[in-house]
Image (cartoon, rainbow, N blue to C red; front, top):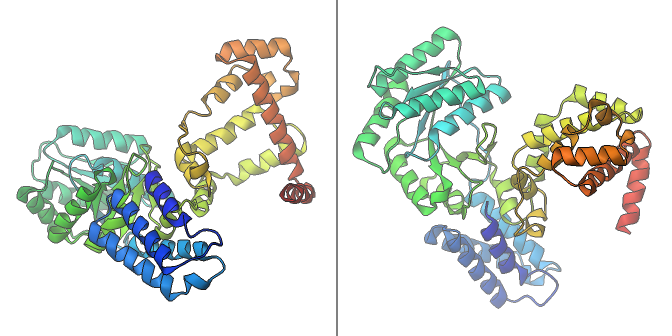
Length: 443
């Protein structure tokens, strides 16, 4: 996500990083390169031009030329302008109704059905809501079946009526069903088309008038670039929707849609899809996205994801095991499972400042832990609980059973022991010792 744009912006701003002589000429050259980077990312030409004009105006207005660190100030100006261009502040969704009705719209293939499931899962787990999914795509039976599969996967009920060909009637019946069964959020998945047409727009408009949703959301595939922005405008002209959902931001997208869409339709991006799993959904924070585009990472989102998987009771148990020196490979496996639940490894690495640039070109596999898990699962329960018992013959058996080498088994044991020492050092007063060690390393 945004890898190409991040690299080009970094090159554009590189000329102003350092303490060389800064002039109006190289500020102009820098903003020209920034504009070129945005255009390459499929940002609308007019928006890219307006953006760089604002950056240049602010840069010269804030005396960038005379500051001690002009490069850093220029990066801040670009970051602030990117944040404003993408909306400024994060915006939530309106859940004031009883039930709250959320109407999904978008073209076929944009990811409406999958996102409907993701949103239901998000509301169920984070907002203590009781959602109902309503299948209103009467043209594709597979779409109704898909929504049922998604509902089963996340444990959310689905209302459908394959005998009824009127999406307006199905939507209204779905809301009545929710009221009768105690569901306080209704998410209506509507039909999509391969292109915008009058029939499609009339249908979605009729549903909207009939159910009066608290939120009408437009789902768009971010990989379609500027076409996504044009489609959003066509939908907004008819529906006047409340917000945009960008899907497939984990794919090979240039990012132009995310940067342009707010300015074109003047509606906030509310959520982004960052993977195929049902929990791969994030609230869109313009400031955090600007940080990621400029290679600064997104530590806040990383911490939030970690906190979601953090089990306080489990942490206390681990703490006691570390203190008693009984932390074993079964406990290690649990830690790996928590990390995997946080999202794809590539996405997580992108949240660490500087990591994206350092790992450029490297293929970060989501199955990075697979061989570690294979080695641990090849151990007996006693060996997992007591790693010190692993002698040469046991290591050979474990390597053969896991399809790995003895060297890899030894490497895992070494890393496990190092981690154990570090965790023990962080206990109690050891934290002070750890800080002293870190200070020494900095020195």
